[in-house]
Image 1 (spheres, rainbow, N blue to C red):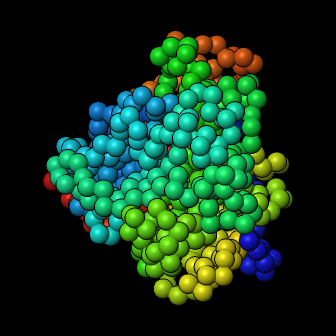
Image 2 (cartoon, rainbow, N blue to C red; image 1 turned 135 degrees about the vertical axis):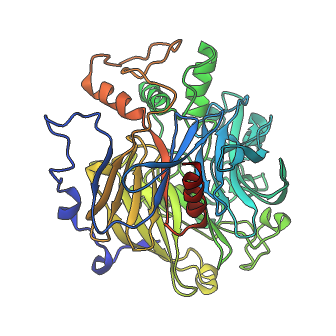
Image 3 (cartoon, helix red, strand yellow; image 1 turned 120 degrees about the horizontal axis):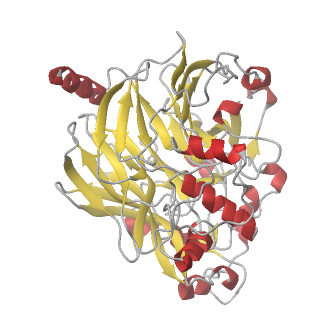
Amino acid sequence: MLHTPLAIVFLLVGDFVQEDAALVPSAETPRETRGVLLKSDAVSPGFTLVAPLQSKSTYLVDLDGTVVREWKSDSLPGQAAYLRENGHLLRAERVQNGFQGGGGAGGRVRELDLDGNVVWEYVCSDATRLSHHDFEFLPNGHLLLIAWERKRAEEAFEAGRHPRSLQFGEFWSDMLLEIELTPPSGGNVVWEWHAWDHVVQERTATRPNYGKIAEHPERIDVNADRPARSEEEEARELDTLRRLGYVEAAPRSSADDARTQRVGSSNRGDWLHANAVAFEPELDLIALSVHSISEVWIIDHSTTSAEARTSKGGRRGRGGDLLARFGNPQVHGAGTPKEQVLFGQHDVQWIPGGESGPRRLLVFNNGLGKLGSGSSVDEFAIDLSLESVNRGLPRVTHVWTYADARIDSGHLSGVQRLPNGNTLVCAGETGRIVEVTPRGEIAWDFLSPFGGDVAADPTGERAGAPRRPGLDDGSARLADAARDARYSLFRASRYAVDHPGVVAALLRKSAQR
C-alpha cells in the first residue's frame, strides 16, 4: 500500500523544471565543457567520490572539481566504490566469468590503500555465483554484497518458472552474502539470504511452493518479470549498455552476442537484477533495490542463515520472507499499473534519523516505462515497527520528489541525503552530479570530466560487434549520447570535510607536495 497525502508531497514543479540559463549549454557554450558549472553558498561542504564506469581510476574531488586523490587499479569497476575511514578505497571490480553477460557484473571487491596498493580482496566469481553492482561495509566490519547464483533451467522449471523464459538453459537469481574479512585475501560467509528460498508460483498445484500470488506478498512470484520488449528494443538496449560501459564492449562471437542480448540484457536469464543494498543498523534491516520488477524489498538481517531460508525466526519471527515491499504492487497481485511508483530504480538509501517513528528511504527513480515522464528522486516513509509488520504490508507514504531534465538518466544513477538536508543526485548516463536543496534549488552542478580508459564511437558500435538494425549512424542524438556515455558513472558519494578518510587523503596529499 502506498499513500500520497497532498499536504506533505513537495512537488514544486515550477522550481524543478525551470532551466537556469547559466547551466544550460548555449550556442556559445561548447557542449564538451565539463567540470563545476555552479557552486552556491547552500552547498554541503565535503569531497565527492567519482568512479567512472569506463576507467580503472577512482577520484576524490573537492567542490571546485580539483582531484585530491586518485586510486589506480588494473581492472574496470564492478560498479560501487566507497571511502573507508582509514582513507582506503573499497572498490567492486570486474573479473572474467562464464556467465557475466549481464550488466553490472563484478566478481571481486578490493581494498586499496592511499597509494593504490591492494591490501585485501575477496573474489566471488565461479561457475555458480558472481557478485554484482553493490556492497555495503557493515558496522561490525563485515561486507554485505549482492551476488547472482546460477540455477539450471531444470531447477527453475521445477520451481514453477515458465519454460519460455528458460530457452537458453540457465537462470540467475539473487542472493545476499555477509563476509567476514580475512586479510590479505578472502573471507568467511557468516550470513546469507537467497531470493530462491522464498519463491511462490501458481502454475502447478502439486509443487511445494504453490500458492496464490495475491495471498503471499511476503514471497516472490517466480514468474514476475519486467515488461517484454521487441527484438529491436532489446538490440537498442544492448547498444546503450555497451556505450555506457555497463556490459562487455564487444562480444567474443556472434553466438556470445546473442546470449548476452537474450540472457544478460533481458530478464530471461538475469531475473531480478538487484542493483543496490542498504543496511539500517538500529532495526537490523536490509533494503534491496530490485530493478527488473521495480520494487524495493525489506529483509530481516537479525535471522541466522538457517532461519533466513525459512519463514520463521529473527526479531520479527518472519525468517527470510519479505517484511515489506513497495514500488510496483501488480507484481504480487495487489494493484494495477496506475499504482506503480517505481520504474527501474537505483540506489535505495536509508535516510539517517531517530530510533522511533517511520523510517525514510530515498531512491533514484529512473522512470523506465513511465509514460510522459523522466527521472526523479523520491523519498518514502515506511512504518517498520513490529506492530506494523505483524499487521501485514507496512504503510508506505510518498513524502518528497525532485525532477529536472538535468538528472534524466534511464540507467545507472544514485542519490544521497547530505547532513545539511540537501540531496546529492548522480545522473549516471551523462556523468552529471547535482546537489539540490529541499526546495529543489541547485547548490552544486558538476559534469564529470573523467572520460575513462574505454572510448565509445558515435554510433554505439564497437570493433567486432555486429551491425544493429534500425540505428541511424548520422543522428546527432546518437553522437551526443555516445559522447556523454564516455563519462558514465554508476553513482557518486559525498564525504564530509571531517570524515576520517578525507582527512587521511588530504594529509597524504600534503605530505607528497
